[in-house]
Each structure stands twice: as C-alpha cells, then as structure tokens.
Image 1: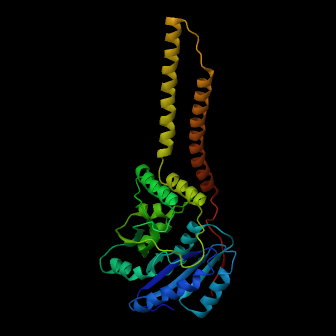
Image 2: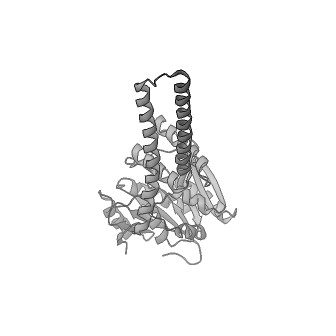
Length: 314
C-alpha cells in the first residue's frame, strides 16, 4: 500500500509476449526504487493480449509483491492502447511509461524525478542519442520519418524520442482528455505541451526476447503519426492536381500551335502511354491519401472502445 506521507510514483509497462523479460525488469527496477527512499511506487503492467505465459507470470508476481498490479486485455489492442490503459489505471502523483525490455534504463528515474520535483519541469522525457545496434536501413528510415513529420506538422517530435517519460498527474490528465481512437502518443505528448526536460542516452539492447516491431509495423505506425498530426498530405494532393492541370493545359496549347504551324500529326504512342500511366499513378496516390484520412475519420465515428479489460489484479 502507498504511504500517504510520501508521493506515489506509478510505472506503466505495456507487455506483449514478454514472459522472459518481466522477471528481469522487476528485479532491475526494484533495485532502483530501493535507493529512492523519498517515494513509494507501483508497477502497473498492461498485458496486451499476450499468447505466452505473460499473464501467468503477472498473476504470480502481483501475488508476491504488493507493489505490482496488472490489467489484462481481452485481446491484442496494440501498444498505444496499452499505454492509454496504464495511464488511466495509474494511481500515482507521478507517472512514467517504460518498456519492459530494459531498453528504457530504470537508472534514469532518479534524474527524471529530480527534474520535476527540484528543477520544476512538468515532464522528463528521454531520447536516444545513437542508434547503435539498429540496422542501417531501419535507422535511415527512422531519421527520415522524424525529419518529415517535423516539416509537415506543427507538433515537434524529437529524433530518437522514446515513450519513456515521467510526468506529473496534470500532464497525464491532459493526455487522457484526448479521446481520439487513432493514437500516436509521441505526437500527443508533444501536442499537450508543458515544460519538458529531455534526457539523452545511448541505445541499449533488449534484456530478453525479440522486438515485436517489424519494419512494416513501424512503417504503418509512421503513416498514422503523419496523418494524425498533419493535414499537409491533403495539401500536397491538391497542389499535385493543380500542377498537372497546368501541365496538361500547356501541353494542349503546344500541340495545337504545332498543328496550326506545321500540320504535323502528333506521334509517339509510347511516350503517351508512359505519361498516362504516370498521371494515373499520381491520381491513385492522391486518392490513397484521401482514403487514409477518410478511413481514420470512419474509425473515429464508430466510437468503439480503444481497449477492453478482461482481468485486473486483486
């Protein structure tokens, strides 16, 4: 039970098939809190529909350690839903979001806590200074994503920004007030604002298990982020249409003038086919952009719950 005389720090930990990593994480973060005598803490695990023994392990650990709680989804809803559920279920005066694989080092928590309590920040967030250990292809596209979204969106998202951050209850309440179904937490954290201190650290390997984020999943996640925090793609589609209209109009003028002056027939079916295919491709691309925004709006209009909790710790 939390001691009412000292602040409570909640750690929200999304989990999906992390049976190997959970015991290692609990040992590591417990060692850190043993040194932080000025706070009480709770570890709130969110089981995101795991198919391994994650839930069984959480049941056992929560029964052995009063600092550990868990909620378990009825199926896999994704990390964004798990983070939202954890923030909503947390009881702390200060709330942190962490990955269970120890790529978010628990040793930074004292520094993050001091940034809020002593230095007066509302949030202490982390970012990776290097991408050591990550494939060059993945690193390249990640950097291009951050560069692109910061050009398209008014919400700043730092390159290498992690979901690992410690927030005051006021910041968490602001995040929870955004009820959108299609969530991109890095953008949401930036959108709500508040004074944030950024802490940089080197990339760390997983403590156990394998990443659940394939290149394709990351690509779709990046698309969600761009669409969720920018309408610039719609403007690009509109501008493309205007430019091709102007190009077509000028082309018609050139053809008519050539016919009037020289009487030459218009030849070159191969180039015509290439132009038609190119313009058609651009049109489909623009329709695809519209379709993405329409699909997101369609999902929002359904008002479905973002997640369903099947079980809670006692």
